[in-house]
Image (cartoon, rainbow, N blue to C red; front, side):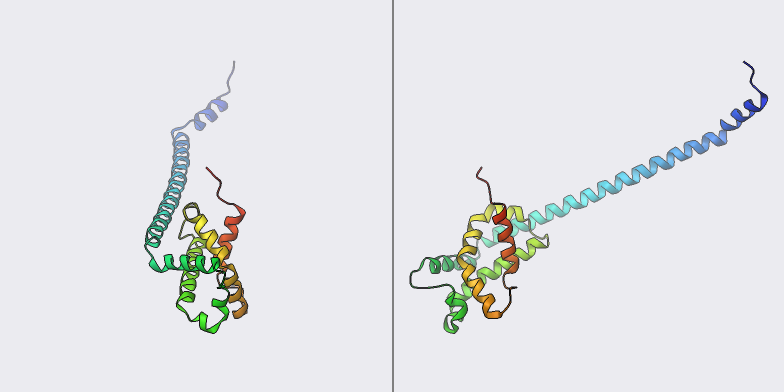
Amino acid sequence: MDVSPQACELAGNLFSAASINNVILLCGVVATLMAIKSAKKAAVEAINHNREIARQTETALFMFNSRSDRNLIEGYQTIREIHSSSTDNIVSYATDDTKRKSELAEKIRYTLNFWERVSVCVSHGIYCEKIIKDSMYTTVMGMFQNSQPYINAVRTDKRSQTPYQDFEAMVTRWRAAPLLAK
């Protein structure tokens, strides 16, 4: 096989030290870019993981602190008792001027405002909704159902649909996907 001198020169130039160095440099640049991309992805995953742990921690602290909140416990009891009463009506605590200023009305408002704040924190990603739902589902759903006539009366009185809207939105999500028996 005859190889022309020009072909030999071309092959020699192609495989010269400078060309090989350029190929090696290119491979190094590609490897570095891939390492940077991988490091960025790992950093984003670490940040997201840390955010989730912080959110779960905040939720756990909220849950433990709410268990000893006497006002909240009394609010639950008040809402249940008024709902079960054959002589009292929860709507009157939103519409009757005397009852609206009563201690019982304050307990109702405290409880509903508490859950409105929790719902706002859930919607902003501060609290983990799944943890709250898994541990408080029955209490929250029952309390909302018992207090819904009060909420509707407040909205009518204020001519606004915004009172307790985040709380209602959270309950609506929970109704759409109830807890399953394990």
